[in-house]
Image (tube, rainbow, N blue to C red):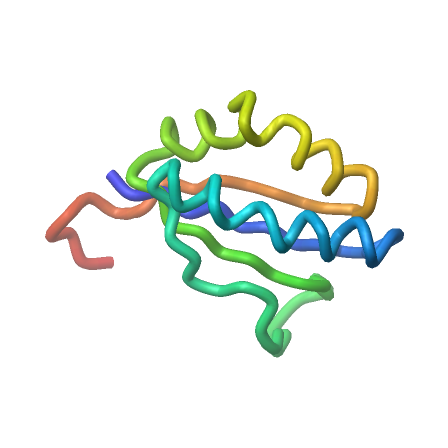
Length: 102
């Protein structure tokens, strides 16, 4: 069942380091089966107090696939780069089963 990694890059503290992260992270996401659905486009808050910064949404084949990518040795150094250069909120949420309508 698909899963969706949702990332809110709330603040960027080191733009050059974060730019380096962005230039390198896609290769590993794609290798892990991830597919970008949104990557830093315009955010329009419709309700509530959440004021996200840069929003990224990535579809994976499963929560397990997303977790394996996040915990992988290949992502380890990049994760540390992102964590040092930004303040980030990140969740993964399970999608609906194939053929099920909301």
